Image (tube, rainbow, N blue to C red; front, side):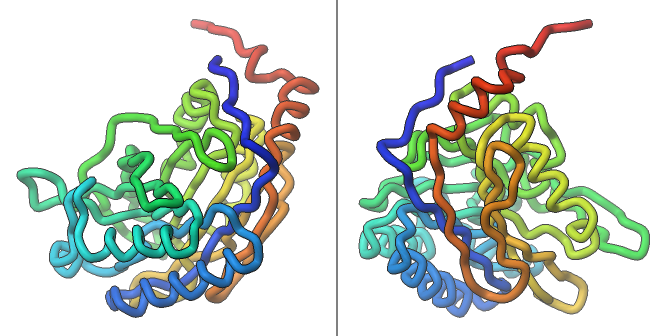
Length: 279
């Protein structure tokens, strides 16, 4: 396993929660305001949910797709915000244009303080479900799947990037821990139906299994007649304890990421080192 890259010091991370609609201007204005407040409250890194700029039908989404890393007006606005706030910024789920396709990628983009793109992760596991008396969604109809596990050195230490439905697939998180991740981001628009039973359990399990912090900014509320998100943006520590949570409404919560705590937990219960290959 790759040794973790330690943070320069203890750092503060904010998870931002909002209720995105098809109104891109309103969505971005809300996020800008909340991010500014979070930085004023001490956040060094600010994280946004999946589908932060637009949540609606694919026909409307196609009109705002941007190629990366070049970007367009949405990326430029995010870059400017990171620069103005002098903070690192996780764009939880960016609608990235897919070359030679009507589809897109659901891409988590990590910006440095100067607005430079440090990493991009394309969501690997796409949300294709049909829940009785619940949502029926086929993300793969409009979205191409990524193929690569991605981690990045940040102010927090090494951060593993994932998106929403990925949280149900623990092997991805094991791979990120092997890359040296001490924290894992799970920006989400988790459905209200599944969130009530699965959200906390899955996030705490990923934290315990990898002995890492889990950082999960989330969408909340009623986006449209047929789509609602669970909310409960939260941060979990390497013991599996929720150390910050916002259950509902627009806002943010902040917690400290302590790389030394990760080292302590991994030395006391060396489950990552104790893994065995089997047939």
